[in-house]
Amino acid sequence: MSLHSTLDPKAFGRVAVLFGGKSAEREVSLKSGNAVLSALQAGGVDAFGIDVGDDFLPRLAREKIDRAFIVLHGRGGEDGSMQGLLECAGIPYTGSGILASALAMDKLRTKQVWHSLGLPTPRHAVLTSQADCEAAATELGFPLIVKPAHEGSSIGMAKVDSVEALIAAWQDAARYDSQVLVEQWIAGPEYTIAVLRGQVLPPIGLGTPHTFYDYDAKYLADDTQYRIPCGLSAEKEAELKELTARACEAVGTQGWARADVMQDASGQFWLLEVNTVPGMTDHSLVPMAARAAGLDFQQLVLAILADSVEARG
Image (cartoon, rainbow, N blue to C red; front, side, top):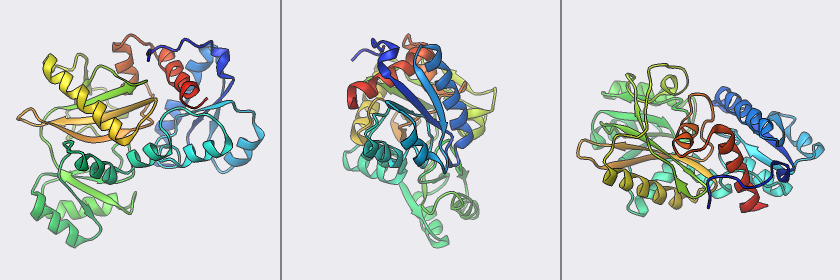
């Protein structure tokens, strides 16, 4: 399938860009949504924005919506619930379907699926108590990274080097999510790889003086480094792209997605997670990868929207 949309912008009908919402990633979603809305309108699409709040259901019933462009990050928009609502309403939408959205939002179950298929992902444990923290420290060793199982944008994440720090990080992450994941720390470069319309885009190598690619490095810092080309040999880059394709296929993503992968000192790649509604801000990675593949931001959003027509129209 071509990366470019060949459809007349008017063919999309009236498009609602859904952004904002109530998740911990609301501020990022507002930035992403406004960027997408501006690009669609500049491209000749009859698009309007909806900040998804308590009045969303009556507004959905009231507005004429031919299709929806989902730019809601996190719970309530990226976890299958909005996808299910739109399917019940008979409104085509961008991105992955109900199952893939729900699965990718759950870092633990995503890892379990990858494990079952023999795909490499760091060893992990689930934390629900102080005793779990002590057991995980014994089983996995240090350093470790703690993550809420259902949040994105690195919210609630922390690297830890002791049992005391692990317990504190678990307690902090538990403020965001009842399920907290801890996994082995992989020391080495991080890569993020976007998939668009069934094609894997050029990988991006990430560099940051922060301990890891955290919320500040993603959205606020000016010292984060993005490498395209990513710096890998042609053989290793092909391996990384193939692994990404397999990881996304295992989850069942559609339309567009972005995978995050670490590489250890021996050159082995390790899958971290898949995002089914990646960021679309000025710091975001999918637009960067699309540019390297020859698509500007407007062409990218039109391609994502076109997939909603072809997949579910």
